[in-house]
Length: 165
Image (cartoon, rainbow, N blue to C red; front, side, top):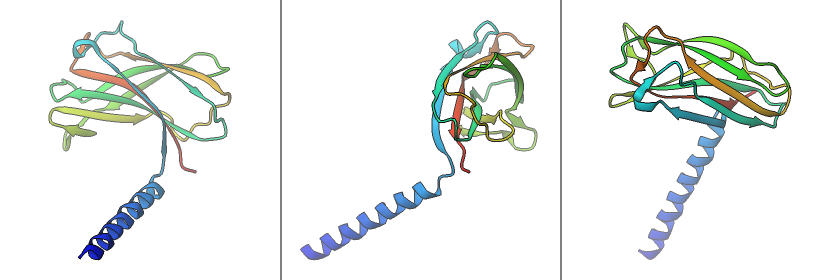
C-alpha cells in the first residue's frame, strides 16, 4: 500500500508537470507590461488623464499595445471614445483617437465579466509594433465623450505584450 501511494503521487506529479509545460508552450504571447489606473469615484472627468509610463529595452521584438478598460453594467453607452496621447523614446508626442466598443445590441456587454464588472482590451496597433529606440514610453488616456464626468468607468490602462512571431 505504501508503494501505491508513492506511485500515485509520482503519476500525479508527472501529470501536473506535463500540464504546466504544455500550458507554457501553448501561450502565444508573453506579458511585458500592464498598468491600470483607478478612476476616482468611478466618474471619469475629462480633466483626469491617467499617465502610464514603462521602459522598453528589446527593440528587436514585436509588441501588441492595448487600452484596457473596466466598467460596471450601469455604464450608459455601448462604446467610449478616447484620445490616446503617447511619447515613444526618441520620438515626438502623438495622439490617436480610439473608439472602444463595450457592448453589442445582440450579445450585450463585450469582454470578460464577473458579476456586474466588465473588462475590455482594445488593440490600438493595427499590426505588431516594433519600438525604434529603447527607453521610456508614456501613454496618457483622455476620455472625450459628450457626458462629463463619464460615470461607471472603474479603471483605464495600457497593456503591452510581446507578440509571437
